[in-house]
Image (cartoon, rainbow, N blue to C red; front, side, top):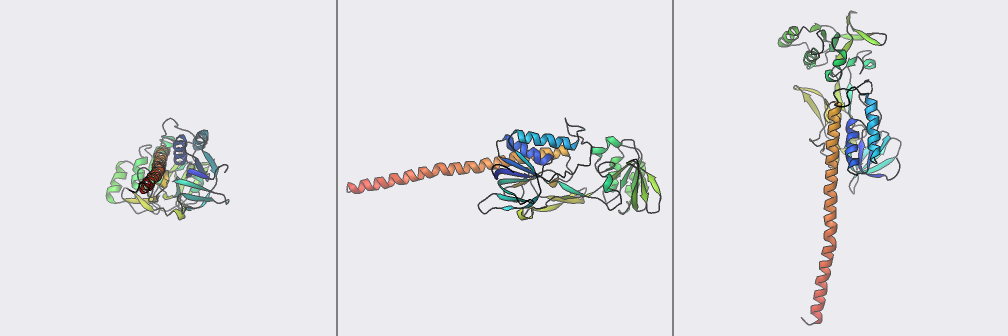
Length: 341
């Protein structure tokens, strides 16, 4: 980090949300530093989708373009991890990186994303983002008409299987360790031609670096070329405990899907001066939504800074006026005394 160690805003996280927030702030002529750990959630994916105008763009290219755009307006982007962050007594925040360097900021934007908690199935993590998938809107088109498996991990698994049925008529729901569906759910699955496979999944079959099947504890292998998995979603808050951010469970369809940072529609958290955006706040948000949330948060931060700067300017304007008025009163009293009034 070069130049001033104080910034109008420090952005923790250099994904779509963080860079979009930084772009909004730098275009508002704010000094901005983005701290990026370099571990984006979608790194294993070859392409991102449903991002209007950037359909099919590799995630790394989007981030590289975003960093260049932030730099164009004077923003700084550094690679590093936050070791601690906390409020300063005189206002603002101190952020310390793991390499020992530190900066201060008037405002913070937390855009750290989330961590996917995968089921403990051998081989699953190595295929994540390739042919082990989570979102049909992100990957469904690419595996259309292929034999798709859905690994049940909780109460939403039946809904997940019904959703993936939109992209293929060959969908199998592997019950694995999830609760057995109810009678109505079984009827829905049967009506849509979705096979239900009993038994615990113990591994994946792979050939030529492609998924070919799902192996059960009985040794039976069911041929599949794509496997959808519902993960446990947890907002990244490493190194940010000192801020006192509030977290809460996020529900979908009446079931908990993970833990998020609590923030309002603008991204403002319950900690004054700290905003949050992207998957750290909205666990199910896609890339384009995370980018939009970053822009909203960036605009809100700038507006908050403008309000503070205006307040200080008014106080500064009033101060000399008050001092001048006091002098005039003193001079008047002195004049009256001299004239015996």
